[in-house]
Image 1 (cartoon, rainbow, N blue to C red):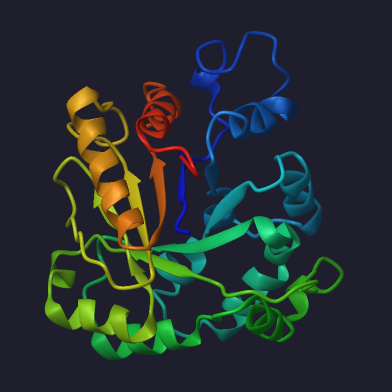
Image 2: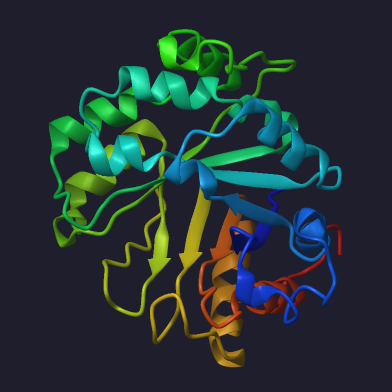
Length: 274
């Protein structure tokens, strides 16, 4: 049965303390608190730097059984290398401990920069390099370079498919060629709500759907009213009815709207088995 995972992009934000997080809650307990109120979280620290195996283990152990993380791929690959010459960086990423999440590892999110236009050959090569299972990811990780010596972890207790989703921000991706490329590789096109700043490609290209809600009227700041949440609930239910899992994350964190909007969307969805 298809499942919906609704949550937030990151959880460690100073303005949330005393608003979403109760006053006096230890910072070390914030992940556990958030994980009791949403059904998934995007790990975005991995976008900025390689994490250590102990961190992945700590995040795994702080969340309840059945919880799922999406993981944001490194900007070193997407923004600095711009998808070229990435064999070593990709191996280092998967060797950093991502697989320590075990059954809690959900999709890998790749966010492309707004300055990167569509290039079919480049993107075909990139999508073709992405591992499609945990065992494949471990094989990729085994080719890490010397920077990961002594800080790598990539064993797999149980193999399972590994999903990928791509969020684009250059208008040249609004083309059938990009959609066809995603379909051929079985990679999801992220439906991104960015207050009109970047393309919104609401297309189904994989066996799951992925949405990022950055703000309806003001990027990263504005919240979602009841009517908007009703529309997003209908979007989620339509995918569920079609047999597709759904992952949706609120990234409108500036004014502490993300966790409350996520909980409000969860409340609008049918309960599993209901």
